[in-house]
Length: 446
Image (tube, rainbow, N blue to C red):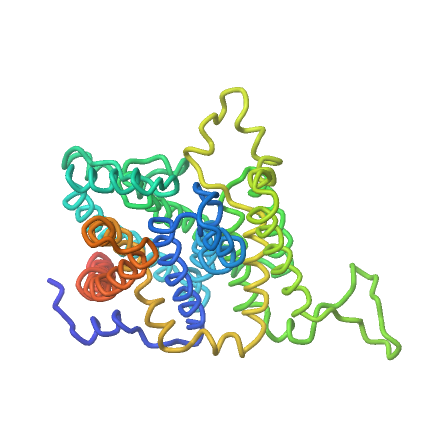
């Protein structure tokens, strides 16, 4: 029988930093927590401000906000790509630090339990709270505000349907979006857990061969893999890019080499300066161009040509949507986008190079949020739907407060409710599930 070890439990609440933990990654996750909350809230209560909104026509101020700020601060598609990239960038760190069989065995087992237990409890909350009365309230709110952006959750009809939904979230390998667990979840974004979990096996399969291959080969074949996955429109091109970045940081002295710049050479051809040294392109220039290029593409879609939003991924995915091969692609999938990929690649090129950026992300506030990212992701939309919508309707209907004032009061209410609830969920569910998974591994291997 495994004894309760309070010291070990504290380590899971705030694990101590290690040589390769790279806490700035946790800080970056904290930024994603803020962006995800803003996107969720604005999509629900001010949909005209949201990137690629279902309500493109609305108050002029909200339209301006969408065209100026939404790409940078609450971009739905950036969140999807960044979460998958960051997951692949992070989960290989323990194995790269100690490339042994027990380490990967522990990762394979504990990751499943650490995700499954919180998600199962979250869906149980959804099933209990999304009653017929609650769903009718959400429908009235959606209709009265003419909100075409927010989805209405599906009601899980039975306990068996609930269990099957949890199971499918950790079993489905494609069409992540089209499953009952995600449809029942407010904002219908629970498919992200499914995508992250399934893509982690791509990381596991590739990372075990990393210690036994040449760095140059890993980079070359990694690029070929990314191109192939991009053509097939699989999330694997984000995943492998994140893993390749982790490999370069931990095994190829990425930071040291990036700080001196990128040499202009191809095989034996080298462009040299007057003193005979190879000319080098500053890394900040390459990262900056990638970042600016990705952002400019996104601003083009949101501010000038929204009709071209789907064009870039149809170039390579459209062959699979013809002849009955995948007719429901837009319904069952969220596309891995080129513009977001360039943005993320630019951000991480700069972040992995410059210490000042890493230190900025290691502040206590972002680390606090980053360690509770899963709790916020699972709870924030539930409270917005069951508490925030009722508060908004009460203010508008019974107290005659303006829409803007009602949104502000609802925002404060959602924050006040979500923050302590996420903290409790983190300490009572997420941390114990982490503790349980590691002790279960120790039990079955002892």
